[in-house]
Length: 440
Image 1 (cartoon, helix red, strand yellow):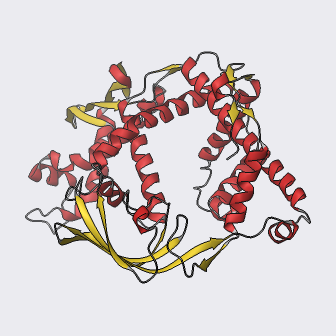
Image 2 (cartoon, one colour):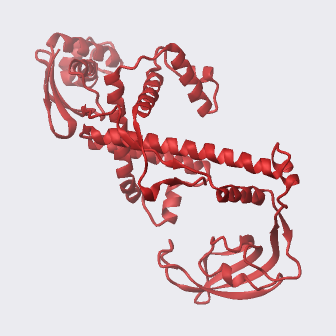
Image 3 (spheres, helix red, strand yellow):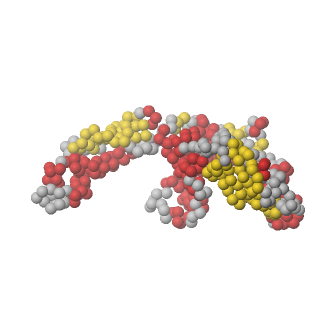
């Protein structure tokens, strides 16, 4: 087998591969053995005619499909290894010559992983956000805890107020005719949540349980339904009941109920410590992102279009699986938002390209540094992956083909690369306008 390589634009290469006649004859014989049972030659029982008779009767080309596969696939694999290529697209093969006497000569056009020209990657400067937690931050968190531990009670002998939850029946009419999706019964609506059409919730304020009345609203111009965009409609609404949220008193007893602390002062201090820990983790994560962004910007790489398209496909799959977990199909959600898969793919192009660029640069750094990976680190990474998927480590291992855990090793190298980049980076203060990280 002999091969030559020609480089094209955007990391496309064309391999010209010659398979000797002797190797192709072997492939023809393998093809015949595979397909002998389907040949029906006069004078022979079906499947019993020898190869020489079959090829004379049907023509040698009857064996070419499988013979090409038997001969070309290993030749292509060998050529890829010979030239040190990493394909990222399906190969496109074109037969130039073929025959028992000639062997096979063919070309394969394939997109390969691009070369990365690294710039500075150790010791780069990157912004480290400043971390602060104020007393106001603590009080906001305390209010959230108070809200989570509240209870709903009937709001008797008074009208609906902002912040209440009104249980309502409603039906919408466009020009006096009910429209699709405009009817609901026993719906709990929190006033002030802005979950309904602008102007709807405010018009419930002042009405009492048992009242039936009309509400005039206009759908927004960007509403997802073409029929209702910018249209004035009337909703007939009945208030079934009104509830309000009763908050617990913030005192030492409250602290005992929601934590392991005996006093509210101790609980406040623990909240501040936790908020500070969370803010620090977020700041460190932002610093890591800034380091990677700087390192990636220092590198040069020509990203093949197919790699971006593949990454968009992965991102779509991730989003689709995430939404299915929430009980909704991606296409259904996009239709609701007035989008299509094609328009959503366009939105994903830039983040997909950024993700591919980062992956390529980090991979190139890992190779350049030749990080060692121990068996203990492999085991620890498997444990981490298993925990992420809520599996046992042994169950995850059982899914690996024998000796095939290279992706685990790659993951360890990936984390080592990021850790080394981050630990060597120089932290710089953010611009004055971005100095504070809010602990929300």
